[in-house]
Image (cartoon, rainbow, N blue to C red; front, side, top):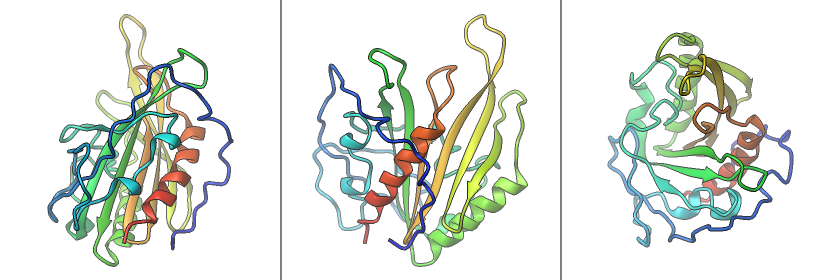
Length: 230
């Protein structure tokens, strides 16, 4: 793997939990058209197509507390598929993407019966050089569009960045039931792995924050999985 990972600060044992009812669904495999911004269909039990992203390139149940990947609808959580702080505006490098997949995991909390986290994983494969350009495009967008905490907005803050990876805090104002609006922080990591872009984002649960520690741990595993792409 050519990417130089910076995710050495994660704590260990975060996902050492047991589930009372976890499934073992067949692996998802996704094939997309070259022009697709993202792919959202998961086909349980399908065989890996020549131009698809195989299940082995995604996080596995043992990486995420025993849960399986779930499909995402078109456009769902689009702001992290990949990171798009400037909205739905396409990046110049989107045209170099040949395949993409986006899935989510309901990762269990550390304590039994505690609130889970909605974790989104995006993997996009590009033609040679395209992933490096996409990484640059995302970095430029984060500088151009830091956002804010107004209604319907996200605030984007880069916590760490290296040549091939970055960690971002995504804040937004959230009101749950009759509670006063409060700032909720989610976390997303983006890495370039050879000719692929990988995103792992913890979007919390309802009005709860995501976990920076969980994202740091999962992006390292996601990088290792994505390194199997050829």
